[in-house]
Length: 91
Image (cartoon, rainbow, N blue to C red):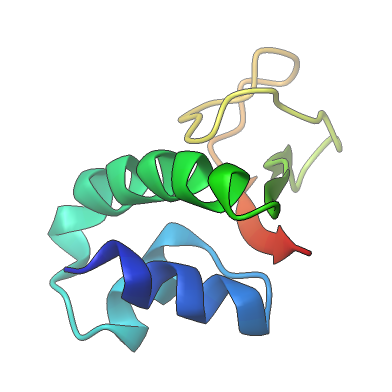
């Protein structure tokens, strides 16, 4: 997986890590590596004068909004029904 490919996808539309896996034809079990690529791409984009932004994950049951990228469970209602974070590039 090339970081340039991840950046190219995120410049087009907001995407989750899983959507990036599918777009790049990567096994979804490698989602952690996609998160690492997203973190590295933020540094590259900063040097180019662009910014990587995150639409934070939120609980689909109670609406709690998380600050972390990949939560597993809501601290408020204990639901595991979490809408994943979406990432995109802002010029």
